[in-house]
Image (cartoon, rainbow, N blue to C red; front, side):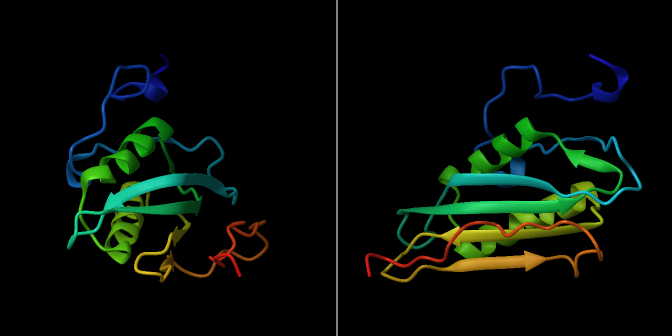
Amino acid sequence: MTETYEGLTQLGQAARPADRPEDAVLERVPAPAQGLDYVVRFTAPEFTSLCPMTGQPDFAHIVIDYIPGEWLVESKSLKLFLTSFRNHGAFHEGCTMMIAGRLTDLLAPRWLRIGAYWYPRGGIPIDVFWQSAAPPAGVFLPDQGVPTYRGRG
């Protein structure tokens, strides 16, 4: 492993998700093209958490887009962080904003947005969107590609 990746505790190691997202370790690596605006996208189409009231599972398709500053999130640590929500009870908005907050705190990205497309609970889908600011001018920013829930109609 090169010096760039020294100190990573999960990449290349056997690692299990934390029991709680608050305990999950998110790691970062230096961005290779600092000073350039490019978008990094992570898609988690099988995100799960628990309803804090009933304990029933909730499911979402989450898309995270960001423009790095000095750092990239290390993808295995992100996967383990997202998996740590499986036994976490929180409303959709809380899960979405916790993910956005942890990534923003870790990376200090030039720009970040999250789209959380939650499957219906009680017959009503809840989608949660957040971005840190307007994206920089001229950056290629594709649509997140997740249609809103339509049901069978």
